[in-house]
Image 1 (tube, rainbow, N blue to C red):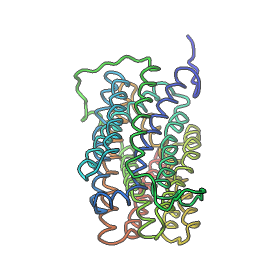
Image 2 (cartoon, rainbow, N blue to C red; image 1 turned 90 degrees about the vertical axis):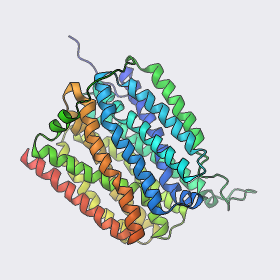
Image 3 (cartoon, helix red, strand yellow; image 1 turned 135 degrees about the vertical axis):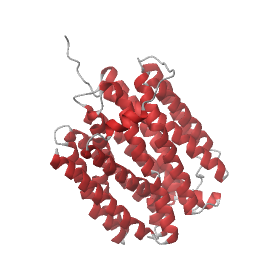
Image 4 (tube, helix red, strand yellow; image 1 turned 180 degrees about the vertical axis):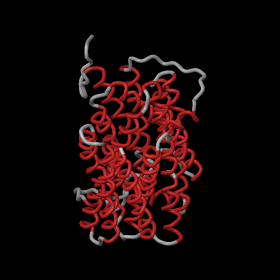
Length: 407
């Protein structure tokens, strides 16, 4: 009997890890282009902050609803049978965004994006879980870092599109008025997504097969909520995703409207979140392979609470940027750890189903985050909304720590 060697950057497993990570980074680049461009989109399409929050919340809601069925179907049939349609849907959504001239087209594109992301997210993670056991935390940390690579590129694109190129003097070039519109980055991204889909299909070794099956939702939910510790972990991560949905979607808008920063500056500060995350996530995954995962996640949540207050209280660009960086260290730690915890507990025959059902709960609650932030910002203030986010982080950390102590 031979022992399988898990190689992160070589062999079939390495190729799949790199390809899926690039696909995740590409879709996250498209997703995270929306927040820095949101102030411009709101003006161009005549939306309110509440309407924008509902549109982005709808993306998250559709993303959440597709998590469980896509994961379950990938268990019963094959992972690529869901991954490829997801990549196709994402390509279509990016194309629609590139021509969206009305609120309705924008909403349709965001909803289709949610479908594609939902079809891709769980089966791709489950495929990596199939390939990596001993190095699961590290593999998921590298995969999750694709979010931050995409975010860095998105924030950079946001700076350029919103006029940040005016910060660089080029002889004979008038940069006072941006030469790009907010729609312009999405067509090239659609082409990139299509190319990634072709590469994945070429390297994939698993067959493509779908059919009819009982998704087993009730049994899956019962298994996920068997003990109080499991139920509390579900609540903790749901609260975390609620905070993420509110924070990520409205950070640039908050910085421009509440802090008074120029849009290019806000987009640049948005990049700080992802620059930190791309370094933190692989390390967090590595640490969680050696230290109890709940402790790592709870520590990250608590680390971010004070920094969140710092973002609100800081006044200068430098101080706000430092507070954002510290906050990102805390909250970026949680993503690979949450996925690894769920995959550790899932039976081999239902890895995708369990992960999909849990993430459906997390992201479904998270879909309320943009609605909460946009609504409360309209009715009261962004500062009032941030107080609620801090309370959610404290409650989530307390629940995870209690589960760790009881375990």
